[in-house]
Image (cartoon, rainbow, N blue to C red; front, side, top):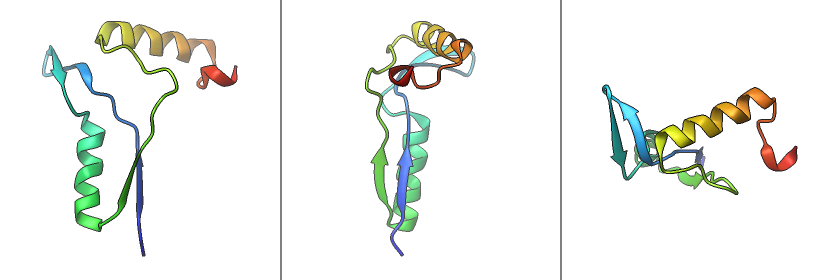
Length: 77
């Protein structure tokens, strides 16, 4: 049976290990690639209509604003 591995991942500036760091590939994308290798599944990357900022603090503020408005799908609100 063929598997479809749908994932959302954000690269750019991230915060981990107590510091801000730029990463070329997001953690979820890395995990999805590993799953595809193990299962032979097909990858499908979920992308936003309007991507988040590459800057971590700007991205976090945008996510927080979206979450607190009660609208998880801005283009539908």
